[in-house]
Image 1 (spheres, rainbow, N blue to C red):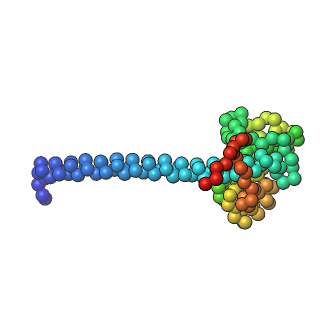
Image 2 (image 1 turned 135 degrees about the horizontal axis):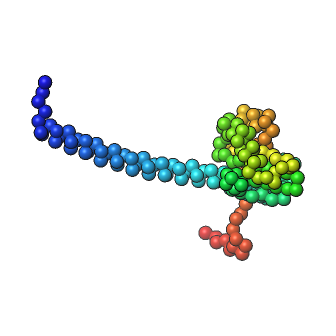
Length: 174
């Protein structure tokens, strides 16, 4: 059995301090990466929401159903947020936007989003509520699943953009 000296303990203590310092630095870097990637994910989601919201606001239609208003980031009675809500006198529609639609998103729409939407908006009583799931990327097998569940399927086609400059904007030729 080896005898542990004071120098051995000091060396181990210094090693522990150095390891602790490295762990704290790694934790800071990890936190920084989380913030950066979180911001990227939020930016991608916001871009997808913009695309669908502006298009729906412009057309005010979902399939062949005409709506009077289209509202974004709507909060219900319980403060749950919905990406897009559309209204007319007889019906409402809730549109959930994803960058890329997954099977679980469709399940969530049916099991959580639409039932909570009805609970959170008492004015839905006696009205038809339609569900729509929108995605910049929408795999064909998930499209079929959503259709079979009775959901509208919205995806981008690369055609619809709008010029968003203010009235009176004077373009500059470069």
